[in-house]
Length: 140
Image (cartoon, rainbow, N blue to C red):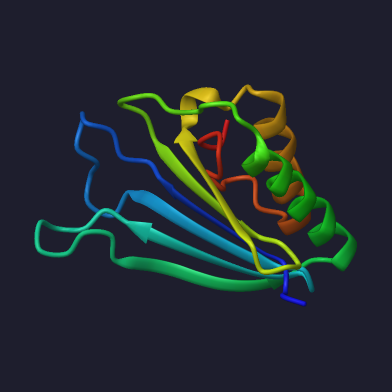
């Protein structure tokens, strides 16, 4: 039996304007079924150094919260809805279930008001206590 796992990578870069140096532009959140959470934040770098690591932290949430989040993420990954749009921040979601099967979904922040996205983002922010995460809605 494989360990259930979630990974969300978000990038808050648009075609215009170019972010200021040291502006946070990418976040990565990983979580397993035991409630271990890893958050990495990246800033916009110079031309020779795109997305240098700005901060890394490890947290723990309850297994019950982790299960709820993994269930919501898996349901979103199973949906046939298309969340793609141009010139907006982007996200990539990857969920591994207990059989080891990995499901992926990607989209843009423009769909942040979609019920399944709002519910998942709210559950993650509440569990980790971080309201400033971009996640799938850009932090709205």
